[in-house]
Image (cartoon, rainbow, N blue to C red):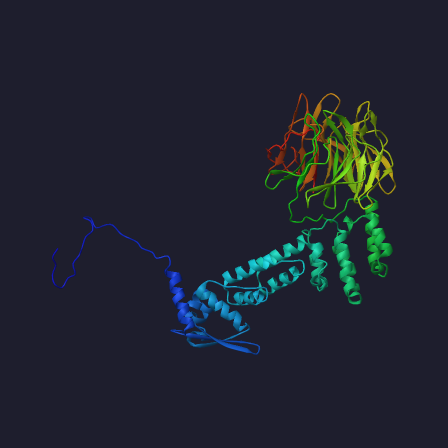
Length: 587
């Protein structure tokens, strides 16, 4: 190709000359910043000096405005927004340690920073001051990993002071989740009265028993007794005192010196005690609702023979998990939870080698996935009902061979002892049990001759039973539970057919009302209440054994789960094994 002397030669790679080529060097940015950092360290082309003064310390740090502006909106505003620093070569910096500023400047060049426990709070404060969000996030992540009962309150206060919402949220969630441990630390005792009231008022507080909150408040007062004694009444109003047991309240009224010296507090707790022992519905006293996974446990059951399985269901992700087996297979058992432990009561071991009614009480600890044996019942009880009042486990009715029980036993976990209490008016096996307002309701069952529609309730203070109105339908092996001051009787067997009908007892007016039936007939089923909804597990339905579990999507009226609003009901996956006579409880 030829061209004029004054014109460079042109080469066309292709005839149409329409192709283009793009090139990007990924390493260029890092290489450029590496060179700029080298120039900073050798003080070349630096156009700004930061004169950092902190208390008696003073240090000068040379840098390039363009680099600082690229990393910090504060520096960008200084150098570009018409502020007085725009034309200054030496800029005074106060309120930040020179070593912290040195680390932030290094980060602007290297995108790398190292922080430790001794300096992280200072670095984070400086990063917030200069709006270096990536450094703030790195410090926040580090502090979240260091959260501990001894520092969580301090971290929360620090986060609020510097306006870091993420750290504040994480620290507070940690405090709520580990309240019992946090309440033993020095930081807890240094809270102000307003801070403590705000803390113990939270629904999210994760405690096994409200007595933990009560004791924490008493210890806080004792820490500086003279100055804090006037706050005790405000603290008690924030404690969910209606969740305490009458025995606990009685003990505190008799033995707590702080209460004995404060008539106002004493009168308040006496009033709570009276309301509890009168079995009134607690108004305006919501239960704690910690943000921890609540699982539904199913224990034992029957499929051709009694089962030893223990499984847990997480409603949040609809998954079953197989846990440690019970020591002995059992069907016809009852389950209860006390202080975060799962107890299984009575039942029968039906096996090819023979049938044995059980008087065993076994305790499962979900923290270590292990079972331990407790004191046995006085009598074996198959198809027994179970419930908990004031931390005491009640074993209601059941059978031993051909003997049908009207007797009831009560277990004290602290003493590991069973004792007989007043017997029911009639024998009941396959009895449904629910607890409402500290009363134990025994619903339906079989007395050895006929299925029952009768019901009665037990008053623990008086140790006596009271007959209530009968159900509309006879039911043995019904699922029974309490929801919103109503006792629900679900399914069961009437002597001829398994039932899908449901009725509820409204405690205030003493009336049974039939409501919408289940989709499937079920007896020997287990029920539990989870987040305002009733879960139904397992069934026995002739001519074969089968299992269907249903879970509400958006709830309403009554299908299988109730939330006073009509819902869509969808099928859940079955449990690992088809279960007959499976009982469940929420922990």
